[in-house]
Image (cartoon, rainbow, N blue to C red; front, top):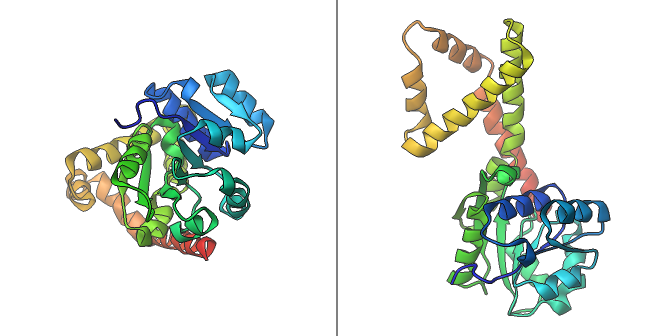
Length: 271
């Protein structure tokens, strides 16, 4: 059956919530009439309603009552109070999906009724352009069908896979925070080209497309990134000169440390 006829509700319409809503709507799989959203910020609700025609409300209970699947897209710091306020309205007929970074399944299930079906997801901001990388961990009451439904939802906005929950902090540090690590790379590469005389707009387009193309090659061929790098670096050529500078600058270690630091922060948020 999958998602056929199921209604999806979002509690929280910040950057990530709005990105998911827009990405899911753009897929055309779920009609606007079956998408619900609630938030305390009326401006974001109005924008989503005006742009997409989805159902909006400032009352979370409206979203819950009208939805089969409820996606909690709020900051980790306020999630507990949200769960406390909606607990009475969440029955076993509802599937609860949390995208709050660092908040463990145990903590989610503790705040809800004992039989509540919960799934934890770590998506990223690329849901806006249907290129998100999302990891999914089902809770103790979630069925295989529940996990499949959540996979299907997040595959509408990119790629998704199931991982053991103890690895979700690593996922948060890698794909959750990762876009913020790549944007400065695009900007810096463009800056280098501007330094060499290329105009800014052309430099940004070429830099962004280069990152996109490299990622697509890695994903579609399944070839190890090190092997792909070797394919581009000819002896004594231009590329190996640039790679040498990156190695001298410690770029590889910097990226590793960025992922580790973000993962550690995710652990802190979950404590």
